[in-house]
Length: 135
Image (cartoon, rainbow, N blue to C red; front, side, top):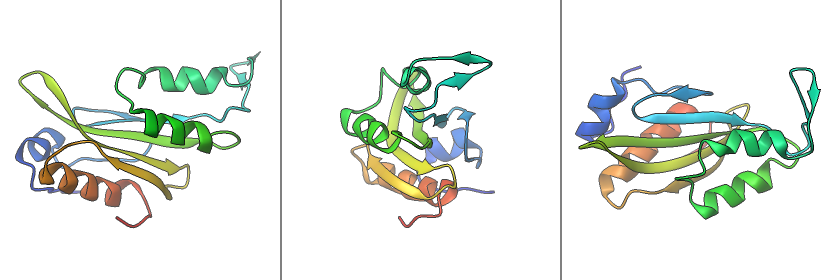
């Protein structure tokens, strides 16, 4: 795909590639978040909530409270995919927005994090790429 958002830094850093599921790239950070009730992993039984908390740990330093709350509400008994879209300027991460979809890529939630209209353009374009929802 040839994603063009109008945000020069994001477009250059993304190289036109945004994808669904578990992704770690310059502009996208996304992972499946397991449900609270899921306890089995690699032959071990864990306490309820342990695997969900483990999946969320990588986001803990940057996830806004509202996004975290929505993930916790949605993952009581189902998994979701949590996306963070960002670009970099002088080594500093600029977060443009957050998206939550179900595992069928239906849009559940989106939150604009950047303060500029260009961040809004980035989020709109990314929502269209990773979800079946409306933006």
